[in-house]
Image (cartoon, rainbow, N blue to C red; front, side, top):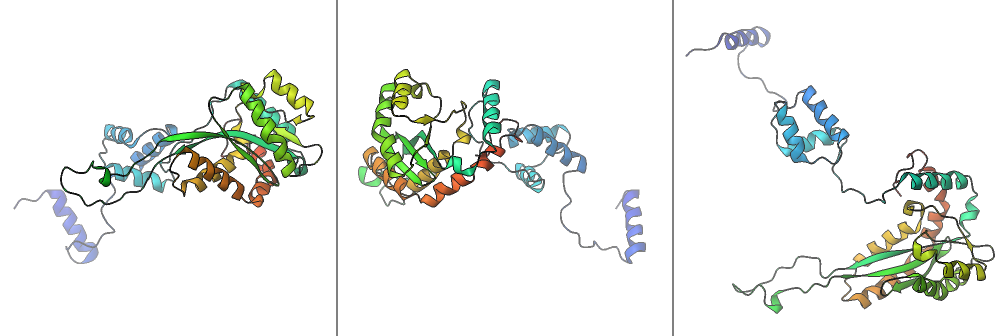
Amino acid sequence: MYSPPFTIKSIIKKCKEYGNTTNLPREGRPPKFTDQARRALIREATKRPKIILKELQSSTAEIGVSVHRTTLSHTLHRAGLYGRMDRKKPLLKEKNKQTHLVFTKRHVGDSPNIWKKVLWSDETKIELFGHQGKCNVWHKSNTSHHPKNTIPTVNGNIMLWGCFSAKGTGQLHRIKGTMDGAMYLQILGENLLPSARALKMGRGWVFQHDNDQKHTTKATKEWLKKKHIKILEWPSQSPDLNPIENLWRELKVRVAKHQPRNLNDLEKICKEEWDKIPPEMCANLVANYKKRLTSVIPNKDFATKY
């Protein structure tokens, strides 16, 4: 049987070095990626973080390396790159970035006691979903859509207005219909001052709300002025600066553990869980507000982890 000269040379070399010609144990299958191809892959994924594995697979094939997507994932993981769901953040225009930064620099040195006097507020949407789990159903052929063999689901959502301070959560109000300036003024009248009294805000407390057009109507400004309520000047498109966003996430996690049957049931559960959020969590959010502010400056005015 003919053997190439390279093979014969390798056998002779192995015999001289190890005293036999048997195959020695190896660490495993040799890697398909060369160092150059691996660096090119990591460079591509870093440069284009939203690129999908299929595109990366095509890119590596162009340089002569054909690998499975699993191999691509493992190679990226070893480099510290992991695929995660993208975060939804408001689009910040240059003007928004500047006001964002101005607010941060103006308040980053404020005493923590100042933030204890703030009553934070915002609106959020809570989704209603029906039964989310899988369930085995024993049924005969062609009866899978029979009512007794199906699990009904209900879709919908409710809008909520809420507020909180370092002392705890204030009132939670369900917004029915489309909110305009008049409805917002009604919400404030029914919920803002009662919340401030319940939380014992005392004198000199400050109200925070964003610059939504419904929040800044002439009637709303006049009402707040008449009630001698001081307003915290707020930069537009800055939900990451509002600690109530953390409470909205907490509320949604708590509500997800229930299975509300309808929108009214969802509203009831939301209010119950909102009242159960411990004051310690609220106090911690306010106490760490300086960290939230300082994260803006090194982030070059882009959205932060908050």
